[in-house]
Image (cartoon, rainbow, N blue to C red; front, top):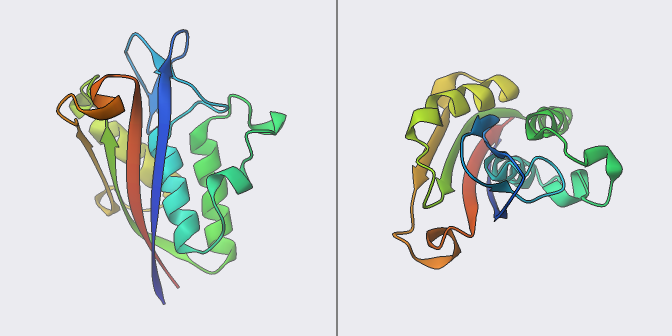
Length: 157
């Protein structure tokens, strides 16, 4: 059995926070606002995986009302998500994700981000694709108000 899931997440920029994308701290003047480390990319991947397994969403599994997840490392949450997927009898086949932001440029970080996600999901790096794009200064990402990410995940039994 093969199943596909889609995930999407958005976080606004905030002063005094670090910018974490795909488990990599990216040098930038602002970070992302969120209950956890606000890693918008990993959050989109988590939702894609949970969606594929019909296992709810990130907010249900890791509620932002819980102190347990305050400032949580999203890579830890991704590994916990993998446990949920495995408990339902699935394994991850591949993930394809896109980060949408005007700045900073993410090309220098893409390889490490892919390595992180692959390691956390127990798959080869060539099973994880991560891309970055701008919206040509349009919309909230173009105005540098925040970052968005979208992901699809294929799981199979």
